[in-house]
Image (tube, rainbow, N blue to C red; front, top):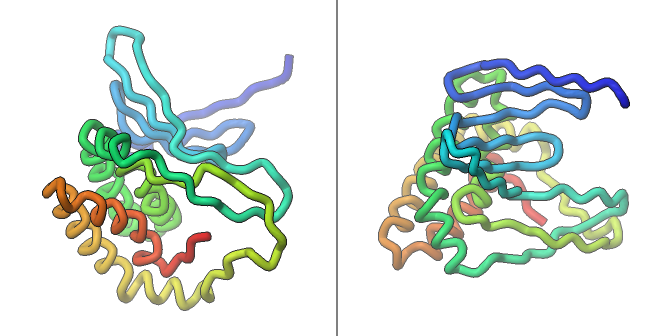
Length: 198
């Protein structure tokens, strides 16, 4: 039997930093609803306090393949996305956006905030890419220069992404505008930091 190490510390109300042998992760929420973002991906756990009943779902999975890979889009049905949004996505997404912008304001935690926004499409409507296909190295998506993306984030992306998400939420609340709202949430990481997706 090998040695195990795990330390969890509270860094803000409802936010905990977990450190273990396999790496670090951040947890948001409390009893009944918790989201954990770490090296192995993002997990959301919901349950009924005091009953011992809970359900955990993994929003994204990281490929273990060492080969160059490109993501192949594979969506869940619109009905599933609608149901998730109505039951979980609308309130959990709002909490994540608030936490992300608190991270931006603290400056030193900006990378955590950006990571949270990158996960927003999965959190809001379970829009994810779950199929991985090995491809030649030339297919790799080349990102813009880091300094250009940093300047965009500070001067434009910070406030433009917020306005973009407000419009997306408004469209989702009209029901009929949900497909456009979901699409806008999917584009939010690019609006925030000019990130190119595969």
